[in-house]
Amino acid sequence: MDTSTALRTAIELLTQVADRACANGAIAALPPDFDDRYDELTDALSGIAGQPRAACSQPPAATKSTAALMTAREVMADTAMSRSTLYRLIREGRFPAPAKVGTMSRWHATAVADWKARLFA
Image (cartoon, rainbow, N blue to C red; front, side):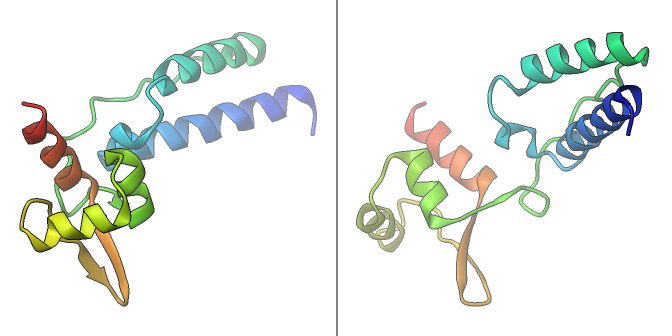
């Protein structure tokens, strides 16, 4: 694969990732500096490969049916809570209960974000 083909492939992959993130409302799950890094990298690659950067449309508002699901470990990291505190708050009705996916517990990212917004409002 020559350099030009490799660069075009990289641009296509980055564009697909960004488009999927925009389309499913998961953009909030990306690192905070993703847009800056994406813009810098695709601009650099576009200049080298001579291709324009594809623009990402405004992502739709995330809904609980399309939002990313979080594991207990991700929820604990996002909220800075221990496992015991997390499950205690769930038992007390002070934190959103997880959805069961088979034997796994998963939280809707929007439910966790909403809880944090209410907590710090």
